[in-house]
Length: 177
Image 1 (cartoon, one colour):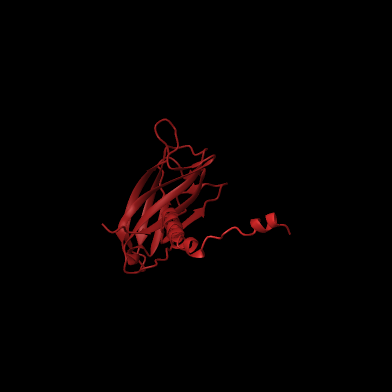
Image 2 (cartoon, one colour; image 1 turned 45 degrees about the vertical axis):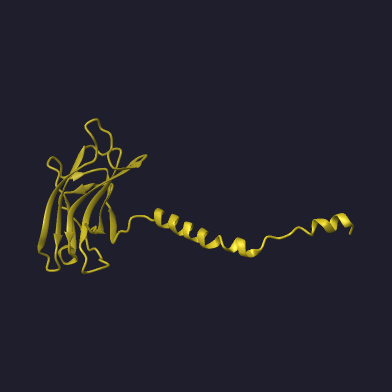
C-alpha cells in the first residue's frame, strides 16, 4: 500500500455516543406515528352476506350475538349495509331489536337509513360498485341488553330487497364524556 491509500483508511470515526443518543428520540417518534395511525378500536364487528339470487326478504332477519370485551362497560351499537350500484332505492328501512339473554326485546328502533341523496349520489363510503352506509341505533347499552341483535328489512313496497350484499353490526365502547 502506498502512503496515499493509508490516508484513506485514517478517516476519523464519530464517537458512537453521539449516534446512540438519537435512538430514543427516533423510537418515540415512531411510536407516536404508529399510535396516530391506529384504527378506531372496535369491540365487535360482523357483516353477513345476503343471497344475491333472492335478495333480502322481509321474513329473513339477521341475528348477531356480539362478544363484549368488558361486561361492566357500556357500548354504542351501529348497523350498516353494503350495497351495489344497482340498488334501486334512496334508503333502506330497518327494524333493529336488541335482546337480552332471555330473548326479551330491551330496545327496538326503526331506522330509515339513507343511502343516496336526492340526486342519486351514493352516501357513505366505498368506490366502484360497492358502498357502505351505517348509523348508530343505540348508545350506552350494557352487554346484558344486547346479548342478541336482530336486524329486519321492513321496506314498505317490496317483499325482498335486491342488491344489498351484506348487513352487519359494529359495537364500540361508549366514549367517556
